[in-house]
Image (cartoon, rainbow, N blue to C red; front, side, top):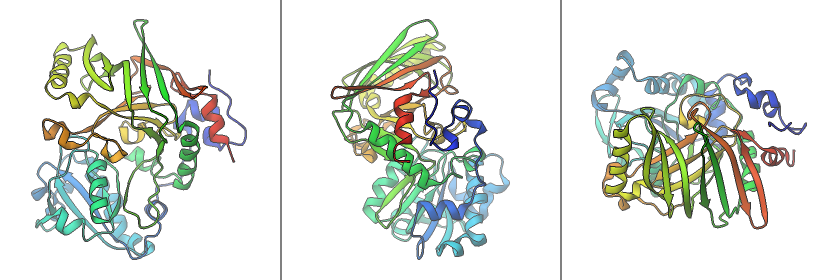
Length: 404
């Protein structure tokens, strides 16, 4: 049952809004407010925008993609970021630049970017030589997440930035319209509530009556947060929308369900932190066989590299970049986790195209065929219920109300 939130919580934590986040009211998207909050200070910074295409040389030249069918993410980048910067935001923020560049689409989440990049005149440039060394702030608005590779590059070259893959109108009008100081405060409250956990257990209820349980060992590590603020001059990459507490698992075993892109449902068996096999529940056996073949060929693809919990009250955007930040959801991720402080590096994979970081989101709209019936945390002698039936339990609600 949904707990009644503490009275001193903001309106967006009311029971009605928690049950129906689409009812939450947001201010209009404001580029100056977003960038000024996330990247303070902005004075004197030179900024650029990166977008991606399968054929970047032709599509970026003279903004040809604007007259081509498709490319909604890239068109949103132009309309709301490029045009916004050119039409006054640069002056308001005390920044320079505002140029747009295109790189070749990686075709996978968090794969390293090739060095080739093109400007809007069609000139071939180098990311390492011409972009990372020239710009103080880099906004990557792309098809696939580039958080991991840009995190590595920002430490090498000293820039700050943000990744906003999958940008759509819902995200613009909700997850990017919030006050990121509030997001940061709430993320920190939940981070403190979960930090130094020894383990997390997750129960999944299937439609056939079975309950699967996944156990993740965390070893008492400090919880980390994605809170959207990239303040100061320290090199860093924000993942926007933000609002997440996460861990890098040290161990894992048990089972959890998986819904594949084609709708196939499977049960994944986990041993020693790695997915070792998938078994079909419903759908295409060929999809299951393909996954098992990939696990056999390159076992690193099944390594669990992240456990994350959403901290925000947001509407469903049908893009994981926002939907994994929703309070009451959690996600696991397989593959590289070096950008999270983990030990799984791209060089450890048999093939470059396998070195992705892929989120597996458990949310009502994403996985309606099974329920996140309960999530429990153990920390020493303490045991707390965190989530029940995709809703935050009393422990998390009380944590959000602390110090208000």
